[in-house]
Length: 310
Image 1 (cartoon, rainbow, N blue to C red):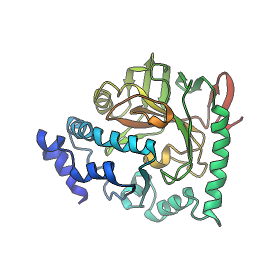
Image 2: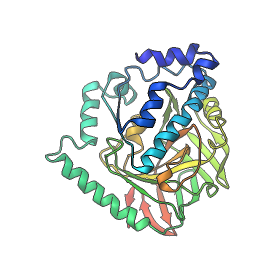
Image 3: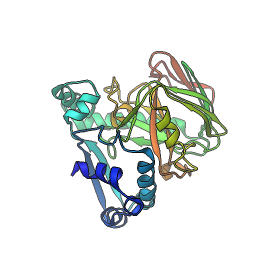
């Protein structure tokens, strides 16, 4: 079954690529809850697919995603997403399968004597920070090759504490759409649809990406930015806060939670944050601030060299 997606994207015609699955449509419209468990054996299966095929399919599914997001915001739909360790994920992380399994158990706190208590502890710590951020207006991120400001005025930070993404350990918001100005360098490789993009550098002006470069994957990056009008704007800004995630795995489920980092997502906002950007894209990219970097919120030092200091 895993190969069916690749076949569709490689061989599908316009009608097939844009057809909305009745199953996914029904899940979004009528199901009370959805549990998604990723378990790819080949994480590079889509790496040879033409980007325009992926774009067509992603755009066709956008309406279904919007239905699910609106129901989630209304409290009538719940979801959770996690990962089953496979050799494919282990290879991406440059680990043996055994070591990757133990890594997953550890970052999920499953090896702790009381995992639930540990998640509750992290949730409380993050909630304190979310409460501190209420009413704040401006964020400035500085580091090697990075000096970016953005507005969080009247936006809500969400405490992601393991109930949706698992593992989790982040708190995120939707920045004001036309507020990002400056440059940011993403040190952690960004994976998307089976491709690894490295050394991404983005320049923003009045919220929009006006320059984009990558050491690897330049053409794919440029194509993704042209999916639709919202793809060049930010839909998310977040702090990673899971200290157990201490290395890049080339899997965003883990990498965006890495303690001492921030991540930004190009494309769609989460409505519960107050964000209004709409796009078929939601691409998280991670900026590592653990060695050299800081974040100031309304000119108050919030994070310094990977450590939260408020």
